[in-house]
Amino acid sequence: MNSLKSDISPDVAAAKRPDVVSEPGGTRQEVRCAVRFPLSLPVVVTTGTEEWAALTRNISASGVLFELNLKLPRGMVIDFSLRMPGVVLGTTNDVLVHCTGRVVRCSLSKDQFLAAATIDDYQFVEQ
Image 1 (spheres, rainbow, N blue to C red):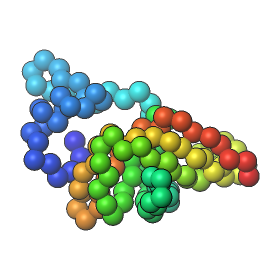
Image 2: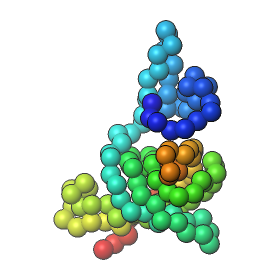
Image 3: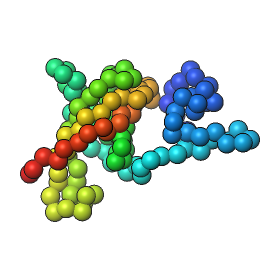
């Protein structure tokens, strides 16, 4: 697992995460619905009237991991916009994507918070 600070035992943490499966003998295996791409992109995260700058650590078709300066509560509905590089998408131009999702977990790692969020809906913005 990664080096997130947590006061929950690894077994309890794995039991609360649907993406971790316990196998006989106590070993754990991560199960993902989509491939994660390690992309570091600037992002603006909003909730109604509040707005924060963040940086992505990785992105998949179903979720994103943000690095930011504050803790977001689990379950919070968020909107975020990011500019996907054309090279990653196989297009000639970068594409601005507006997404809506919800925070599934948020933990402190060193001096930054890491917030994992689903991507429940997205819209490509014409360039």
